[in-house]
Image 1 (cartoon, rainbow, N blue to C red):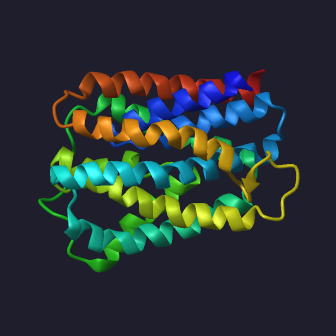
Image 2: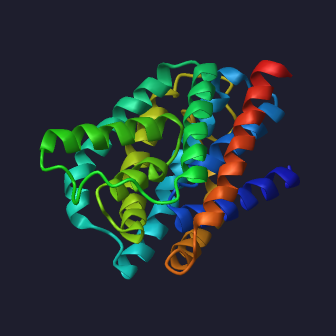
Amino acid sequence: MTSLIIIFLLTGVISGFIAGLLGVGGGIIIVPISYFILLYLDYSTVYAMHVAIASSLGIICFTSISSIRSHLKLGNVNRSILKRWVPGIVLGSILGSYCASIISGKILVNIFIFLAFLIALNMAFQRDPIILSKDLPRSKLINLILSAMIGFLSVLIGIGGGSFSVPSLTMFSKKIHEAVGTSATLGFFIAFPGVIILMISGSSINDLPPFSIGYLNLAIVLLVSSTSIFTANIGARVSVSVNKVTLRRLFSIFLLLTCISLIMEHYII
């Protein structure tokens, strides 16, 4: 038990710092670690991924608040983007979390592997952002569809959306620090509706880990949040002065190894 507590606390330290530093969302670390720990504790693969995703979203609710405060002080949050994208983000989060609640655990793992693999490739090989336009689309419908897709895909794998929203914003000529800060704010609007839906949808499920409200596990949330809420603040401050190319490539290797571990767990071992 002591070892598990230490692992979750360290998970919070690393995920919070990475979330603030790279704007990718700590969920991409929290979900696989929580999932493997739940399997180690002999919880069913049927619901382990659901618990890991919901708990990650609960943690992001706390972590994003700390990160948002730092980015607001640094002037990195674009309020105009928030006005255009928050409605779609919330819509996508609600739809995605509902889909996650009715999808089997194995399919959710496969979705995580696929999207994490794409994120890893993007981080490894895309040195300079692809520019599509000088600004966001003028069409409200296009903005709604784009932001809803970000919310939908993000909540399906329990992340704050930075892995999707940061590249999307840089495609529309937004500076990287502005993209990261705005993405951190959008992360809250992805995580909060998603975790509410997963709490409700999992309320009738038996044999979930202790201290669970639906699929949300309070023990995981409190342990990881207790450290990540501080390191996210540090990561956000460091982000304005560090060259991220090497860090992104190293992190991409971690994601690829995570994908390989999940594949081995489900299809080889």
